[in-house]
Image 1: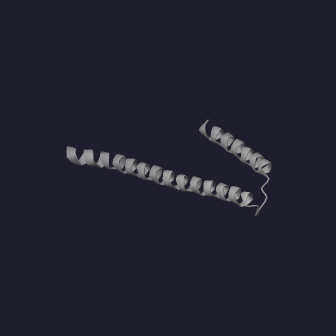
Image 2: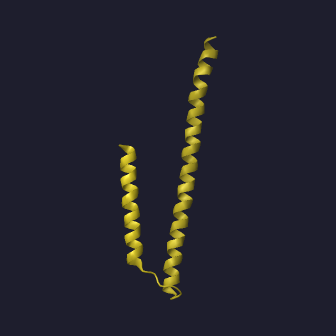
Image 3: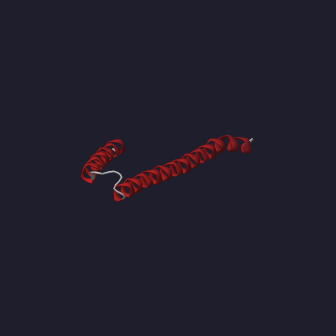
Length: 81
């Protein structure tokens, strides 16, 4: 009876731990893939500009990226408060 009680108490803890681990692992892989894609996109822009196929206004891209990062940092700060 004691063993049954311990199993019924331990099962949700183990299940929650495994679910948390799997979620964290999946998020890590998804974020890694997203950053690789963003990096390849930036490299492609740089290469195409170097080959004079396109013209990139890096100042505008820098300003837009800075604005996006400022909003993201603010939202993270608000959520974690």
